[in-house]
Amino acid sequence: MAPGHMIPMLDMAKLFTTRGVKATITTTSLNVPIVAKAIERTKTRGNGVVKIDIQTIEFPAVEAGRPEGCEATDSRTTHEKMSTFISSFKMLRQPLEQLLQNHHHPHCIIADMAFPWAIDAAAKFGIPVLVFNSTSIFSTSAGVSMRQYKPQMEVSSDSEPFVIPNFPGEIKLTRMKLPTFTDNKYVKAFFSDFAKEVGESEVRSYGVILNSFYELEPAYANHYTKVCGRKAWYIGPSGKESSIDKHECMKWLNTKHINSVVYICFGSLSNFSDPQLMEIAMGLEASEQQFIWVVRKDKNEKEDEDWLPKEFEKRVKGKGLIIRGWAPQVLILDHEAVGGFVTHCGWNSTLEGVTAGLPMVTWPLFAEQFFNEKLVTEVLKIGFPVGAQQCVELCGNDNPIKKEAIEMAVRHIMEGEETKEMRSRAKELGEMARRAIEEGGSSYSHLNALIEELKALHS
Image (cartoon, rainbow, N blue to C red; front, side, top):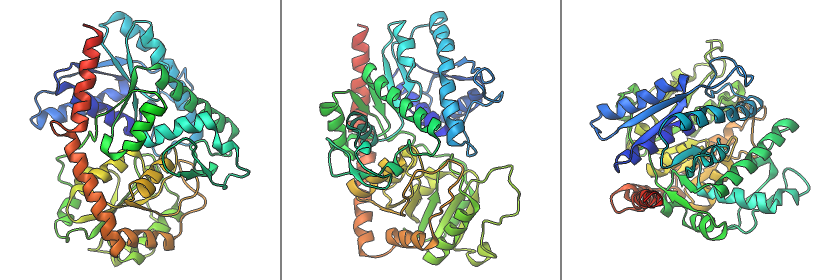
């Protein structure tokens, strides 16, 4: 339904097939081409072991109050639309139950965290469910503590800091940085209730599976298991396979020195306002760093680009490259010329930055991204915050981060003595990530152990 959830699920299915497990992806009709293309692309790269079936269920978009054919999120999604969209997922329960009734019963179902009702649907057929949590175990564990102790209710204002109780480290947040922060009372109530449902589904499930690796978040992995009393398997980083598309930017990067380029991208759902894009452009130019900047603008918007300073691209020609639309992010991050990453702290992007061994400028926007920022900047110490103070609407922000803050943050990860220490730590984590998925590594072993445990349930 959303790229940040769908892609890791596909990568996970591929991982299971490499261990001889038959995997089936269940998705809606309009998402089938995306899934099929991803599977076929893997086969054409010589990975002949990939045997993934696709089962289709119909999404009753119109009945759910959605436009016909609307089965995925995009950059024009607002928090209100997102809440309606997530609420409509419940209408997939009956089609899923019919599928399980009429076809084979799998030995296990891995359900995205956005489908907490899948636990009850599978229980009718005695099928264990693993919840795929599409974020870090840091934010997952923090969520457990937040729901249990409610420290956000003990402060007198949205901007007053509070410490997450019974949680490793002195991690401070404000209500403004929580996923539920919004002026819309309906949306706030919805996301609060939804977070509770997700948390309860984790408790009632067989366990949680994450695209992370133990060495990245050991204190929080142990906290989740020993303090929260829940089972979890870490099988990442998955999705390391890069696109073979030779994008023009790769030729551009080949002309640059090692660690000389900063890469800026804010994910598939972010859609900044023109004033914010203007500030980013001016901040990048003032930083005097070489850069690749990915900008995703609404296709329906006017073509004249008022969001760029006059003659900006002329002034930065050869030094800066703007990509309008899709970019081969993994390829870019892995290129030796790239020395830093400005990210929205979505978990997939964060993990890709870690795996590439890069220091990051953290610019969280919504969802659990402020939790991920804390992990990157305060726990791993491989990031520098740009200064975002509150969750914003998905379609823009009326209070843009200023160019001076952007310039300072970019310089911080690209220049100076402190940068060397940060880069060294990032490189160490990148090596840990690579070792985790190799034979004998922690994630490799976690996946094997999970498969054996599931087999034992049916022996």
